[in-house]
Image (cartoon, rainbow over all chains, first blue to last red; front, side, top):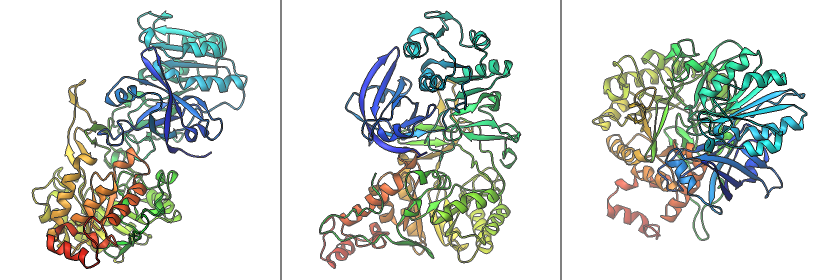
Length: 283
Length: 337
């Protein structure tokens, strides 16, 4: 598998989707070796920008195609100045991209029933994952949720792909009122699911992991941590993760993740320095 | 992206000799990575051949594995960033077995940055590295310590000299040692003279400036470590001022300059101020190809000004106007030709 590349991708299309903008960018180098779960790091503000740090976005809608035909998609939500700059970019403009980055979702060797859970634009990377699982003969269900209807993403594409989607919103403006974890237990039981995949806010991922654990099945989750480089050199995006040897280490979300087994992340200790994390005694 | 090996000189221009030296360490070119911004080179190896660089300066390594500080560890600032990573690392044994071994097989020149809580730890690190093939030892005395009550060694000329003289005695005599200085001092020339007298073969400067960002949502410090180190182009004029002053204070010592270098033109400012080589740091986070791009740009900047080699540009800004004009007249080229 070839690694990440840096390339100047031309924006092919920008489409408004609810509160988000969906970018389609011609980036054959990034598209070429992409696997579901990976992300792209985008420079913002132009060559003389005062914003040095790249913004990372989960990839979906990747069409590897030929050497010059590869396109990628990602979703941008207005957050800070960097995403505001991106939101002002239009078709024809070029973006400085580095990708594909991170480890992909682990895919089962055989078909297994799976529930996919997306929060907000976190649904995006689950769409190509769903395609892979369906192609492998897996029976899947998808639950998508958001605070409100305009912050949902991908439910139409998912309906076309899977046939049915369960929708939840905090305010009841679409689907059932509540959280994605409300319909999750019955979906797991109905399907006899053997794995849960999720992408969304950290609180949601933690809750999804707890539901999966209660059903004695694994949850593979894509985390969202603040990153500076995306390529593993800056060490800013670390999480306390328990290894197979029982030791907890600060692992980089960008290169050791963004996909982690939810049961290995010490959710309650995120943002702290646990005394038993490897090397805490060296501080 | 532009490869470093690609000639950046146009027709009719002479190729610039990019070779330089840091004490006894001979480099094919003057662009290195900066400590803490390139891990130990392996990740950047996905983007370019790290052996093309003057050298890879590794993230400061300590004796034991070190977790680093809690998140958040980073805040973006205007033309820069504030970080409090806290020297997360695997410890010297794992570093030698994995990171140094990788750099060696990659054919890279290795500058190893070491950090300790006290003089004894620095000495032990130098001893552990004694028999390993490293090209230069960068002694990070601008990190927190316990001997000076939470200050950094590099803020105190006596503490700085104590560490440097001890490391110089303990390290392999064939390996030059450079002291890495902090800009957060009243008189950086004083610290420079102190480490020079203690036996430093050269000086790396500057480390980050101490800063703080308040998160307006929480109305608390944005970083888990409360304070952090400011880096990036925002600090570049401070760094160039420090290189200028230290070159004046210890003109016989080679300097490795760093702090906000994003382009070849930035690198040239450091060289003209007195640096024999430069390290590229935070710019890597913006552009993983930054070191090789900057190398090609620097070569073009030198050629455009009529320099035949990088060494003749070192400290050139300190020369009087008449002396500069004479230099170029002697080779029948005008300044800026």
